[in-house]
Length: 96
Image 1 (cartoon, rainbow, N blue to C red):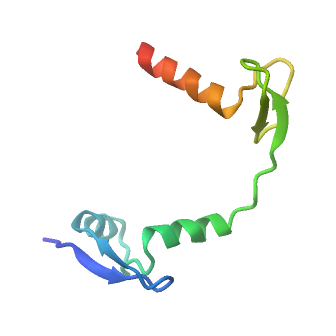
Image 2: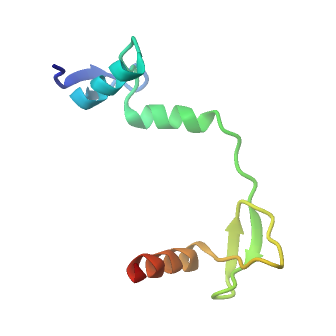
């Protein structure tokens, strides 16, 4: 049976909890070592290894404002700014 453990991040020195559930997951996956970094430091390390996304400017089909998107916009597909896209997603969720 696993119990929560408090570990110290080797990156920032902050304490973080290695939960019993996480320990169970590590055992299932066959990981031999405990995590050495807290979640924010692990996330920051992952992001550092990724190339920055190239963003493209387009006109939002809903409000006419400027939209920055990570793909080359095409004339045959609508493009939405972040706000309009979020509104559409909420409307879809509410309809279900």
